[in-house]
Image 1 (cartoon, rainbow, N blue to C red):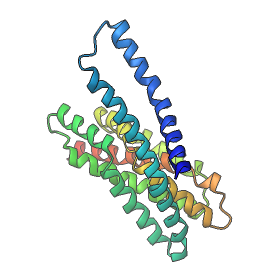
Image 2: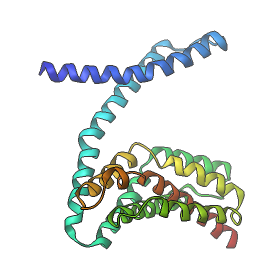
Image 3: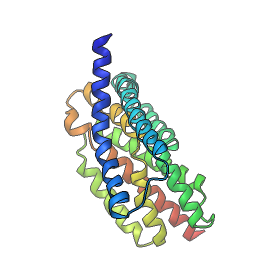
Length: 236
């Protein structure tokens, strides 16, 4: 009991050590450089405490649930024997995982507001989710068939570069931002754990060489899907 409490406190302090320097830096800039007082000190301190505790709980929860659960499923999927079912599962997991990413929702809301409704947030979010799911399925296909990452990444980059010449400029910028917005607290732990779980169980597959790189492929998938959305709006 006491050992568990000591471990949790140590982990909590580790999280605090990562956050406090950032908050201290911002505090110094605000008070000593910009000469602006803190209006509500109690609210400010409470916010810091909640941030530390919240991040600590999330990291602990992801470690004992998302990471463990995703890796366990990944190690069981190859026993199904049907590659198309594994790829379909990867796509669905990537798609629905993207829909709940808070960073993507915030970005889509900003895009809809700046574009005065010309790019609805629901359409953008679903387009990104489809691309992310496609990238996830492509990454799992790479692992199952032991394909070097460079043989998939280079053609995808070539496709992206060519599409940039035909897509409205605003969609190029949005595509780059949405790619980073998908790499949030839900997708990364779950999808990486799934990929590593599959890589560990397959014969003749090195988890270090094949299990990683999945995040980059999902981000590229999101970029391609947003560029396709921009191309469709230009044609239609």
